[in-house]
Image (cartoon, rainbow, N blue to C red; front, side, top):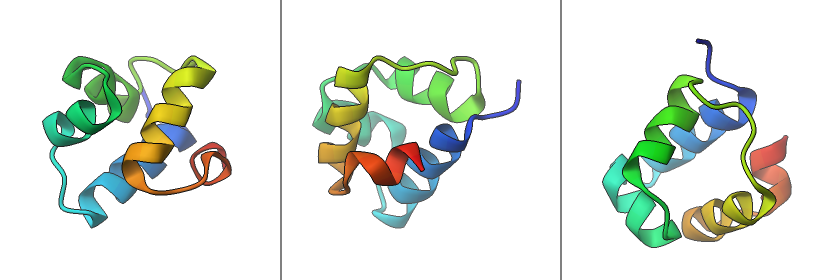
Length: 67
């Protein structure tokens, strides 16, 4: 599957901050598997509370992840 726009943004921001998927998962309180699935396009829709957690962990506004 092709990664979603949000998945690509998460990966780009994560890598820019020097975080591994595991690091980001720990900061966001989600599983590393979820990060992997989001970044690779295995999942396209993510619950709003997860988006909020990811944005906070990455230090960006939710709108930046959503595009």
